[in-house]
Length: 103
Image (cartoon, rainbow, N blue to C red; front, side, top):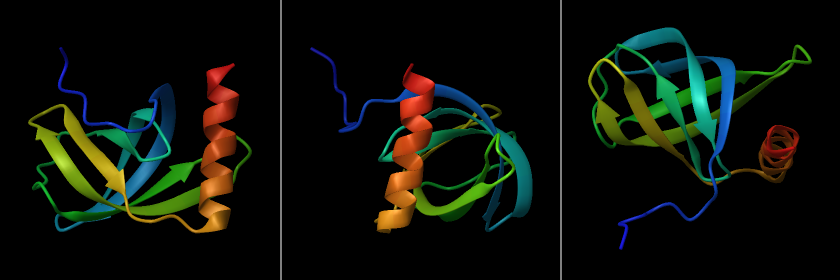
């Protein structure tokens, strides 16, 4: 039996991103995403429960800013982020990104 806590299916994705937290602003990549959160690749230390703002840089030149909390941190690898409640626009944009990556 697995101890899976995720409620949403994760989709592999490599999107450039920027994130802002206690340590400042950083540029990075996402490695997977779901309607509930994403994984951010970074060498920068974060703390569990830290509030983060991540801006996903979309292939069409647009971007999507989302707020979330760190749920786990792997030193020198990155962290998992659980999104805070999404607006309808954020939800629709995120759903479209996931749909395009799921093909």
